[in-house]
Length: 462
Ligand code: ATP
Ligand code: MN
Image 1: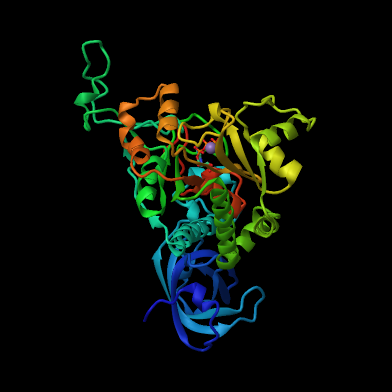
Image 2: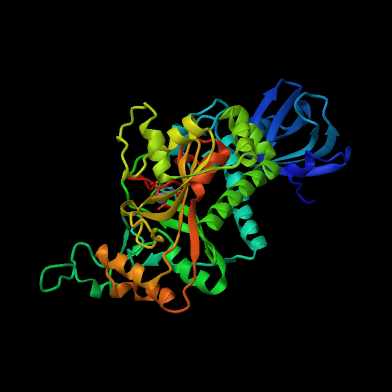
């Protein structure tokens, strides 16, 4: 007989039919006559209740049906008389696949702290909270592809191993097959990377943007969605050393088009979660963050505030607030400033534009004032920066000048400069940190809890 998926059974009203479910025991309670076993198969946050007539089953088998054990249950689907569920299964056959010795299985009924669960990340997906987070993570990944596919954008695979540090977005992880105990040296005692696997120094990518631009200037609208790596020693609840980033890049989009896309995209994703992950969100709203649903609905129903960096600096300066990093024009806004603007001042998502060029990347479109660039950061409550983007400098001479000013290796940038040499057009793009989005959508507080196996400084377990 075929196994039924619990999510479907819970919606079924085909009572008195025989069904088979397979899953993991969440709880068992009862007495010498009847046992109630809650079984979960991962298809939904909800368990199905299995009712067992104790005297008709082997006591040895029932003893081993404990939290975490894997079972197959065949029985009649019935309308439930108990509270809290609509259907239940009256067990006829129970098969035990794998025991989970209660003496050692770490996930017993009691609630565990997220810190503890991080130490057993190989098992934490079996908890309600992490089951919900994994399912929402999947739904958001799917929605991202759907959104761009429906818009006619192409998914482009940019390299993970790169030889360019052009982006300058962060410290990089070196990729090398050289023997660290016995490094080949050049005459002036530097490491001789010409002997390395690729014949030069290579790293894990910090962003797919530069290659994404190449594709956008032929395909029109593209996006990347892949892992990115930053070897920054930032121990915050919002930074990972390995995270996933979505980077759309669009020909013929200026900064306003770019902002419109970013706002529409974020609202689409949040709406998608509200429509398709309602059970998981309801669970997280009641167990993790009581304001979650309210916050999600607020964001989809309100226009984001748009203002210049300069305007934001003025607000911060006159706020009377004591910040750890003092505010003045030229400051790279810290999470404390971003969150003040969003949470205290506007109480709404904010898109800031026209940042000082000194604190932004070389490729951003230079404004006429010679001071600022057409950058945009989207700032969200609880998160701070969720998106960073810009209109790109499409003028060959201006871009080359900036590369020289910043002392970048001009020769190695040839391939990038070619886009401006041949058929250049106005274009724009942005990067959305997938895990920052998930922090917002799930209400989880720590970025380590929205990726299955987090990589952070001094931690690469599992
Ligand atoms: P921050 O200032 O928060 O460190 P950033 O300015 O370095 O971020 P960008 O280079 O603009 O970030 O990257 C684009 C997006 O990628 C960010 O808006 C954010 O959502 C996400 N992101 C950046 N760094 C990380 C990280 N270490 N872990 C998780 N997400 C990140
Ligand atoms: Mn940024």
